[in-house]
Image 1 (cartoon, rainbow, N blue to C red):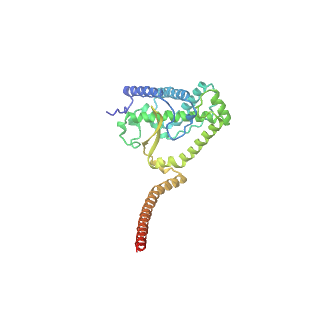
Image 2 (image 1 turned 30 degrees about the vertical axis):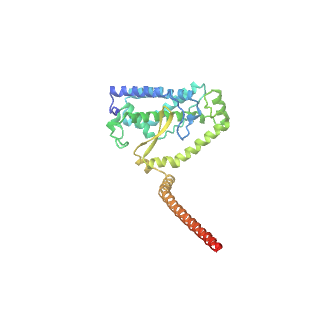
Image 3 (image 1 turned 60 degrees about the horizontal axis):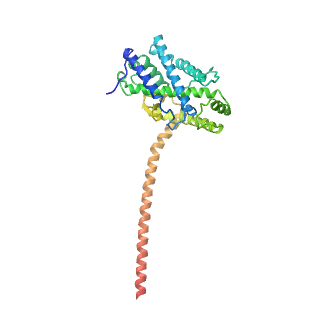
Length: 314
């Protein structure tokens, strides 16, 4: 039986939010290692401090939901204040996590760059107002029959994305990689895979390359295919899934260079399979010719040998 998310503010909505928080909190006892093919800034943390960070995010999110409910914000208010709400929220988490690690952190001019902002905007609407206030054309199902699992996916994705931004913000304040190395190891918060300056430099270089590839290739492709990458917390660790989402507006706003890459990907998807098929056919034909030629040569050699033996016997 499918469990649906409440479509308006009610006691049922309050109860299901409590269940969602409890269920997610229980998931945090799992191994939170990254099981995806993508690098995350949180990969640099060991599991103990990653767990602390996720719990801080969950705790602050509870406060945020209660504060917004008290302010009695409507859908338009939530949409207009979305970035400011997230900015203050992430600022608090940065400060709290820095205190946990006894690290001084100046969070002025914090850069909050959250991908898939529309998913986060809708998550807040689900948590505060109910499913009927979301955009009815955004997802594949009727907004009044939003599966609980769908909101859970957005919820877990939000936690993972925020954790990534927090660590990115904290580390970018330390410009010298050796300083990062000293900080992480002195606080014993570092993943064992990143215990040297060289491994940390390589880690950041991989993140930069990944960011470029995502910006010019992966993200435009997801927009074009109308799907969105989301992070989930599983018993195996952090994993990736893709959900369908209408992205017509984003397609219209794509830069020319991204459109060029999309066209290149489309051409590649059309041309390469045909080239592969042609190469396979040519290969099969060459193999057939080679086998036929080999058989004919073999028969000819046998006949010559037989003819030679007959003449010799005479």
